[in-house]
Image (tube, rainbow, N blue to C red; front, side, top):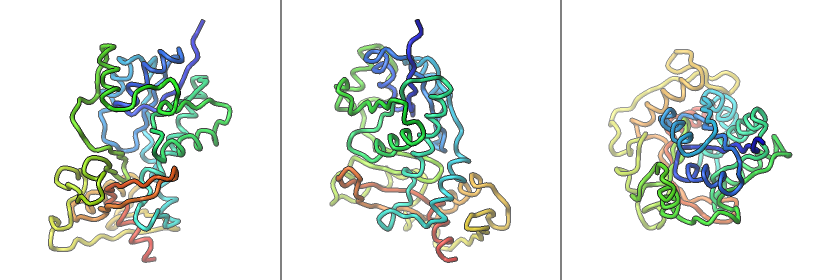
Length: 291
């Protein structure tokens, strides 16, 4: 008899890699991994291979970059949507799209459940579950980190879990920032940022942006054309949303634009400190406000 299926939001990182064998052992499901490309720059072939080697029955990679920019980021831009004066919603805007795609694949695979790897302390658990329930109230949601059967409380425990089963570990015991990246932004949390008195170690941290003091002294001018509140051209060249944001990320990044260090309020009642790189988005928000 065929087993029931679960669709897993799979990133290729430690948490979601551990969840594949955990779901099989604790729920006896066939695991369908779904990877959603929002511009993270990941090696999707390697990630797909890892999912299958770890026990997934199938793994899909979905290119949602253009849809993300044009259906989600543009909506936020038109509304001048900013959280607590500085955060340009780079993670928040991506989660409803991820939820929608997970539901589409759950329907395609006739899955009985959708699983995510968001922790019980952050906003992502709420974002994912509200999105999934909005699109598919009949599908069960498994929040692994809140599940009574989940008994791992650290990266070390997750690594030990995989090693005990002879499975590939996507990261070792070294420390790194907790990051979320897409074409719109890159966030960094953890390490020295856990203490508010510490300055960020920008030289160790930043990937897409230079600090302003390392940017060129001479200014760089850009022209952005808008139609009905949506950017459609850069420096006189018509571009789709993905191409335009990609180019503005390069321009803003080399000029030290869009770098913020904030302590924000989470919907679960906690505060969280993060450093965000949103070079292209910061330029677009400024230009849009000036209209």
